Image 1 (cartoon, one colour):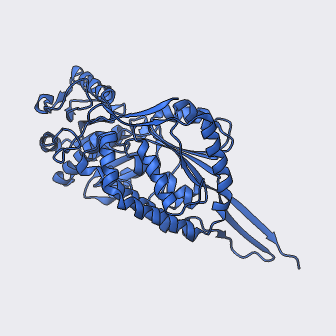
Image 2 (tube, one colour):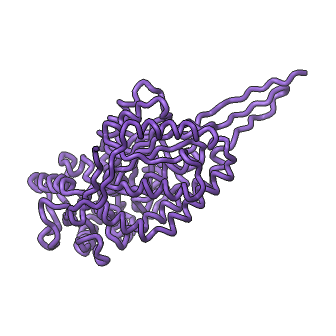
Image 3 (cartoon, helix red, strand yellow):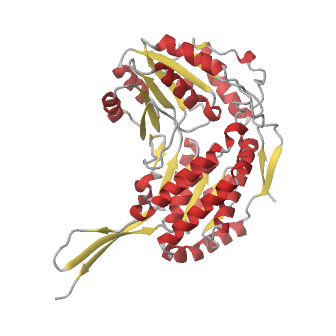
Length: 462
């Protein structure tokens, strides 16, 4: 029997072990979902909303326990770990609150002798493939709207965070969700691909790497099903000459280093107007040096390990190459006692003297490093911000909202922030361009990707 093993980055020991689903279990889950979905789609929306809200309450009751598990499964400092469940509740409750509007039928203007309307129908079975870095926040984006829209959901979580899938299904069952409507499967990569190809699956929501997104697209090729692909970013921030410098430093540094930089919409490139560059770097370096790297189960730790040693080695290689190419490192790793090569513990780093010929400014780092470059004006900043294969979010720090809007219209990204970053507002569409993916979750627009329109053209007889 094949097994899944979650190796904790805290101590490199096995934290969770689970058997992978066998072929007959996968087939049984598909059969159960196919049988349960039609009745769930006919369930009044108010009942679906009530079940979601009850599941959220049950999740909040377990917040401390779930936060501790996150700490051990993926290494987030315990002082921050349970905060993810607050975001889970916010997003789920928001989507429940707008479900009636997002799923409402469209009545067209009166036309003599005719009734014309458009209704939204669920797609059927949605397969949600969720990552480890924000396992509840990323999953809720797809799971809750899919359920509210009347779909059945199969959830496959990362091998790094298998307990998250189990707990989500558990609380929804306790909340009264009918059997078969929401299930989890622990799967190998090969079986996940096979499930994408399964004729019973009508929608796939995948969050992960660009390479993983290509695998999903290839597996779904020719099936003509809805795909939602959230594939990460190399998100930039621009500090204009008129920015509040202290605020820009605090927000951009937090956006770059929270969760040890392991965020798809984290800040990985910072462009600062040349008049503020030196002051920005000085203050930012002081802020970065104040992080406390250590075991995430220590309440004093503010920067935990990366998810695994290989991830830390990838970031180290980017930093080493940049320094060899002329970049300046402003943080001495030796000042962080826990930083050790060959482990997941990695000191934060801020680099200057970088350029777009360096991997650290092109490739997604997904770790605690950020490069800072001076720019002459908005035009240079815009060109550099758009000089990327990714386009998830971009942040502008300024006191001029009109300037931010003008720049935002020309930025190639899914979300434009002003004076904040690394945040997802469930009232806004979450989407990306270029290698950041396709599709949309959250907001009223998100429901359009989890349903299909059906038009009714009814002619009345005289």
